[in-house]
Length: 309
Image 1 (cartoon, helix red, strand yellow):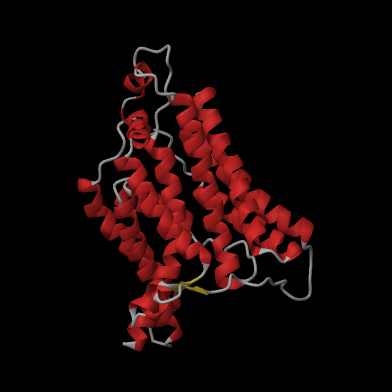
Image 2 (image 1 turned 120 degrees about the vertical axis):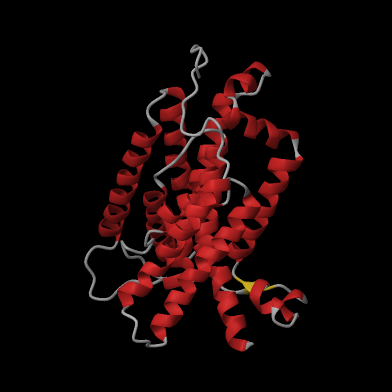
């Protein structure tokens, strides 16, 4: 039971960057804006989060500024595709490369060449009184850092917002039929802008989670493909928060199992273990695409003056 509890606890922690990045992807996608810049924005968030935390000894400030930088890139995606009506895929790739290059540049400018790897303190564990004392479940769900709790509460909050409020219905209508939404007085442009901005902030925060929770330091390979997997996870979850949570747990479990197997010193080559999460993702996606329903206007720009969209 102890080994199972430990694996479950690690899975919940490993779920967070997948969950935050996927919820950010979902927000923009539900209004029709599809981002492919997650990997770059997460890397930039990791760089900014680490550098600010290292310079100020404040993890909170590092997380907030990482979210702020992500928000800027999210707004840029929304502005370029909604106001300028540029191709979403092309803009997303451009932002991915820009964020990736800027992440490495910032680290080199601020840190430079050092004999030892600079480190910062990771987020402390915050045990919830009474709940953390529940056998097994207390350790698995209620003995984590603040970002883990934030991700869980965010997923629940987004579910109720999207499916239990009029504002959530308005938001989803923009991604299904923006012309109809526009005719009902819903601000299509403004909705797309704030959702892509908020989505970018979540991606930046997902990146900051990695150095401030996992490693205490920054490397250019720290994201490790999680941004690309977040796109697959959003499709797997059918653009719905509750299913994205389930998918994030699955992806994280594959990650943790592969890591634990490698640490255990099995005869399986390390390269094979690293591929496990991606193979599992591919298998799941083959079946998921059969039932996953995407927003009808996903990836398309809305032009009020056009008769077709």
